Each structure stands twice: as C-alpha cells, then as structure tokens.
Image (cartoon, rainbow, N blue to C red; front, side, top):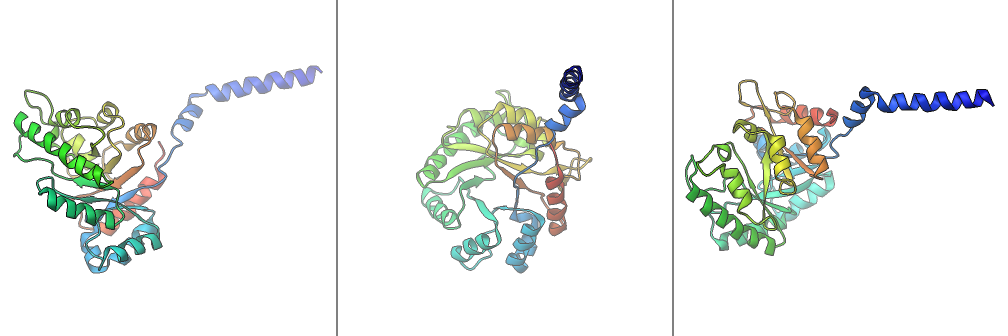
Length: 280
C-alpha cells in the first residue's frame, strides 16, 4: 500500500513539475503553425505570363493553397476556376480602383465573382497625394463606404490595403486610424500589409490588436535590415507574435508578397519553407 501511495505522490509531483516548467509552457505556446497560406500573383508575374498553369502547379507543390490575383492569364474564368480546383489552390481576391465609376465597378465585381473570388481589394484607396490631409481622409472614407455597400450587395467583401503613408501623422491623427474609425465594419475592412505598417513606424502587432475583427487578410512581407523589401523569413520582422494574435482573432488568410522580386519562384519556395516550419 505504501509503495502504491508513494508512486501516486511521485507521479503527481512529477506532473506538477512538468506543468510548471517554463520551457514546457513555452513549447506549448509556440506549437501552433499556419494551416494554410497563399501568395499574390505579382511575385511571379513574368513566370505567370510565360506559363501560368505550370507556375501555379509549382506554387502548390511548395505548399501554397490560396491565390490573390492571377486571373488575367487564362482564356476564360471557367478555365481559371477549373484549373485552380484541379490542382488545389483557391482564388480568394481580385482588385478594383474605387475611383472607377459605379458602372465600371459592377463590371469588375461580376468578373471577380466569375473567377471564384470572395474579396474585393483596393490597393490605393486615396484621391489625394502624399502626405494625406484630413480632407483626403474624409473623401476616401466616404467613397470606401459607398464601394463597400456596392460590393456587399454583390455578395463580396471589400478590403482596402495599407502602405506606410497611412502611418504618417497628421495634426488630426493617423490616416490609418481615420479610415478604420470612419468606415462601416459591415462594409469595409483592411488587408493589413505587415511590412508597410512597420515601414510607417508602427507596430503591426499593436495595430492588429487595436482593430481586432477588422483585418481578415494579412500581407506577409519581410523587411531587410536596410528597410527594403525581402521575402518572408529572410528579414528582420518577427512574425511569431503577429501570427499568434492573428490566430486568436481567427484570421485565416496569410498572403505572401514581395514587391519587385527578381527571382519570384525562388521567393515562393523559400517563403513556403519558412511558413511551413514556423511555430508560434
């Protein structure tokens, strides 16, 4: 009986040590990984022009399962949708300009839906020039709400994409905050570009926390030590804490981007390896 009692005590004590061991807690905390990730077609624009099917096949082999853009190379929406389904990559977003007329937007929305995409993106939601003024912000926010309503009526979700300029202070505050606070969350949300937030002098993690529920898609782009673009995993951005917060918010879409990349295929391959092996 004593032997059995001692065994139980020892077992419980041992379990307590394991549970309280900070290294074990850290291992548990950092055991999450991305279930899926995608890329924006511009990284491999030249390769897509030469052989869009072969390029998408390579991307899938690397581990990508989502695609932003990339619809201009197929002969028809039906061909594009069918091929993407065949190889296992999901088109998630197409782009528009909110400066287009409502009639032009309707045409773009129809095209986006025909290609099986869920999100409508505006990469430059501004009328004015940099630096932005309060009047620029008011005008842009009003138009974003209008376009968001049009998109919602077509069964689409409208997002705007940030750069660094939205984090350049005005007397009235940050343009980023103005757009987020003066647009209807049921109509307009943000595809947050991690690199550009950092480039603008803000903390991507804090922005994500501040606007929980407003950022369904992340652009995953790294920053070189000199501040230039680089592929995810090659730079100085610590993606772990950002992805942990994104997981808490149930953010599903992580889109690799790297502007002006000379070796697009190589960037996709190294980015996929980095994201597959990242634990957070």
